Image (tube, rainbow, N blue to C red; front, side, top):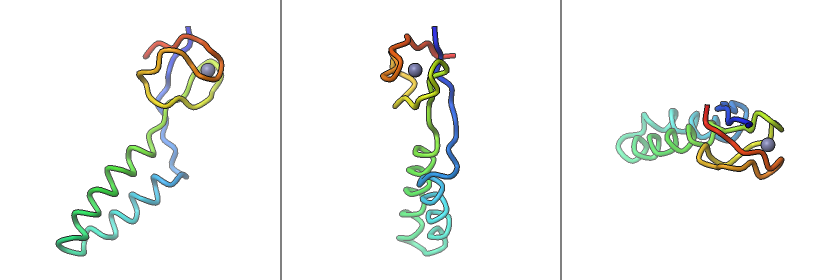
Length: 76
Ligand SMILES: [Zn+2]
């Protein structure tokens, strides 16, 4: 049985959102709210899951069968 591994994709758009979020934190009060929102959103985008069998990305760790290689997935 294949497994799902947790990865962080730091070169994607998620990192950009976190960066913009941190920069807007200092712009009180609206910027702070937007900044926190962007950081949470960015962290969600940075965190990705991969199938250990084929290496392809899966949407979440709750997926039971890999959409690419049809292997059953178990959470490690
Ligand atoms: Zn797979």
